[in-house]
Image 1 (cartoon, rainbow, N blue to C red):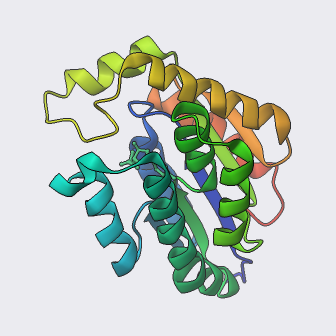
Image 2: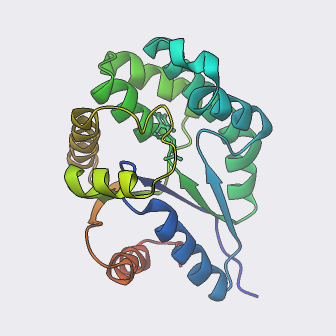
Length: 213
Ligand code: TMP
C-alpha cells in the first residue's frame, strides 16, 4: 500500500453549480485509485457544526438573524471542524474534500451581504488558525443557468436559496475576485459543461499538484 500525505481540497460555488455531483465523482475516482477520502461539509461536518447548520438554514428563529450573527455562526462551525476533523485527518494522510470553507464566508457574508471584508478576513483567520486548503476549486456558472437549476428542482428553498438573483451575481463575482487575488490556491472551472468534462478538468488539475494523486 503506498503511503500518502494528507491533501486538503475545498469546493466552492454558488447554489446550482453542480458541486455535490462533482464531489461524488471525485470521491469515487480517488477511492478507486486507493486513496482514503473523507468528504465533509460546511456549515456542519461535526455535531456542533450540524446544529449550527440547522439554525442557519431551516430553524424558524433563523429568519430574524442579523448578518453579523450569521457570520459568527459560520465561523464557529469552521473553528470546530478545523480542530476536530481537518487537522487530525490531514495528519493521518487522508484526502479531505470539504464542501465549502472560508471563501464561502468571504463571498456570502462579505461580498453579497455587504459586511466589511476586513472583519470577515479577521474572523476567518481566527477560525482557521492557519489551516488553509492546498487547493480550492470554484465551480463557476452564469447566474441565470444556476438560478434555473435551483428552481427546477421543485423542492422548498432554504433561507439562502430564497435570496434575490442579484445576491447570487455578487456571490459569483466575489468568487472570481478571490481567484484573481489568490491564483496559486484558487482555480476557477467552467461548470456550465457536461458533468464528465468538468470532472476531467478537476482530475487533470489535481494531477498537476504535488501529493494530490
Ligand atoms: P450548501 O452547502 O448546502 O450549498 O448550503 C450552505 C449554504 O450556506 C449556502 O447557501 C452557502 C451558505 N454559506 C454561507 O453563507 N457562508 C458560509 O461561510 C458557508 C460555509 C455557507
